[in-house]
Amino acid sequence: MKFISWNVNGLRAVLKKDFMTTFEQLDADFFCLQETKMQAGQVELDLPGYHQYFNYAEKKGYSGTAIFTKHEPLNVTYGIQQPEHDHEGRVITLEYPQFFLITCYTPNSQNQLKRLDYRMTWENAFRTYVQQLGTQKPVIFCGDLNVAHEAIDLKNDRTNHKSAGFSDEERAQMTTLLQSGFTDTFRYFYPDQTDIYSWWSYRFHARDNNAGWRIDYFITSDELQPKLMDAKIHTEIYGSDHCPVELDTQDLFA
Image 1 (cartoon, helix red, strand yellow):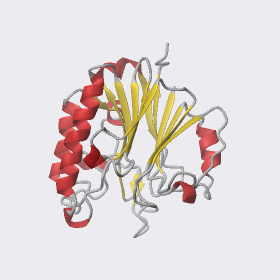
Image 2 (cartoon, rainbow, N blue to C red):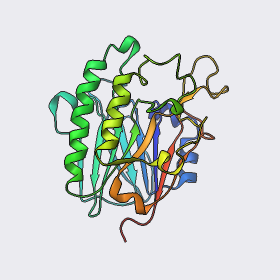
Image 3 (cartoon, rainbow, N blue to C red):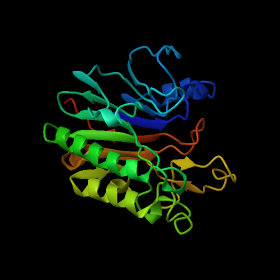
């Protein structure tokens, strides 16, 4: 089974940059999006064979998530069921008999870490949410989690030590999450691979120079490790400042 996650930095924008070609070529069972930046009714997508689910931010042109899937879920939940965190369209959860699938767009801590306090509140709430789901059945969650976990996960770790996405506080939150029973699937397969990233600034020719960050993830409950087959980062795919990331598993419905 193939899972894809992609921060498209605006679905309407990426549709003008060969999104449909990429979508068809990847041919995923589950295609998760973040930062769709749209409201209901602004895009009509013709995706034969796929069910479409969207969560929109109340603020126009901001945040937002979507999942397109070939497999109709038992249930769909929008947000993490905490009103203070559910105004920005950041989470969609699909429930299947064997697992939960979540797409997540984690709040950015912003310049000078202006939103770090809120980010810490979010991290604790989201971790509690996935842990609670994990008591029922395994969880797969993906998305732009807005943190490079270790120095290996970004090009310029020294100069970015206190930048949003590489602060000690954000990195510690990821460590806590993983230690609570979850697997960073890319590092599970490629623990030492360097110079592979999923996001590059639009400034300073960052992508040309591969001065990037790995901030897009597939994270799974540890109990799914025997069913994981591979993880990929599609650095060859353009259209956004992020590239898609992939998780391949055995048939989880078998």
